[in-house]
Image (cartoon, rainbow, N blue to C red; front, top):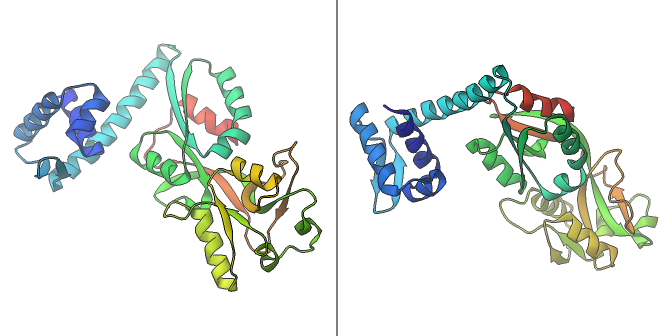
Length: 293
């Protein structure tokens, strides 16, 4: 069993396709096929079930080898980083993913400080939905993801970062700014700008469930998952919307908007940094967590 065979098998298993694995590893599909067949010969067992011409599934033996390969590659990456530390070679790679609003409003200052302290670390930052962030963390494609704590599954490790509140977004001078308190039955009298419906829309499901529970009918005039876009349309009076805002940090200063906390309906939450529990953190990756906290 050779190292390149393990690498090839790992990517085929992770991506579920010889074609996609070949693209990811810059190898030919025939080379990967040969490596997997050689592994099956060495181990004397089938690693994949071939279903039709393209679909493949891991066998029981394949699942065990995949878990082994995944742990081995994780430790190998850490070993390289550790050896670089010993040799005083300034080299490393840190991958982070978060939704656009978090990247735009909350991460620039920490990232600036981090890159100043660790200029030799190659940073990759991905703008992704919360569900996609979770997928990337689970697959081991990124080191850290930033999402709401309520979405963080128990199988992942999480570190609290910032406290958040759910707020209503309205234009300055809007009639709802004079309501004390602002109730949902008054909010639904106005056109709503909400996230799109779908399995990945945590915010939309939460709002739909609340409206249903209260027996309220409502009119959606726009759907977008981008808070910056919904804020722009709220500012022009097209409708009212909702946002998760960070407690004690002014929300989008400079715009003609008012953010009204809805604490009577939604409990405060936290943004958390999530990672795999089996993740081995090198010093420069741990430093990023320490900087956030």
